[in-house]
Image (cartoon, rainbow, N blue to C red; front, side):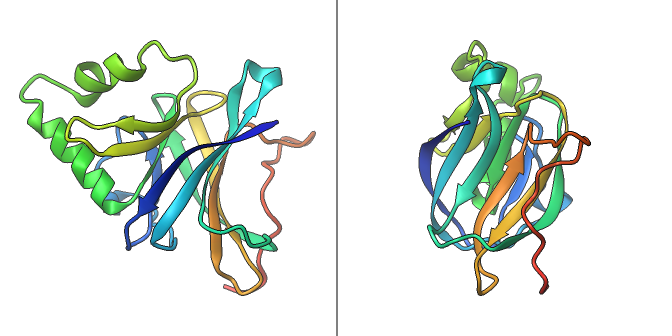
Length: 182
């Protein structure tokens, strides 16, 4: 895999959700993942054997060693794109979609002009109001993909990880070793 930091951002307090980037709506309709507020790096592992598609994506909060993780959610993808959202980013996206007016939608009337012809999306994608959404193409396209936290020795969340392609010979997703504590 080719691992690359594709963006830096600042996460607001209140956790985050991982959702389909183009149809995400109310924050409380998804699993809210506990994550530290503050600086984060969007890191993507591209798979050269799969035409450079994203195999994994993660928001990284710390460089401390990972010792375990928690399988916290499954992200359902219907548009081929996953997004990492804190509450203010999702509110801004929803507000921007409504501001486009009747008969308009955020994909066709905004995002398509930015990413419609991009074979692999990985980075911050601008919103009409000036904000941006951390957005990544889901490696194998539509489907359900596991979301896990990567935790340090003290249980702290070091990263939130989505696996789009990692399966072993038995078809099991490649997830971190489970943490023994809650």
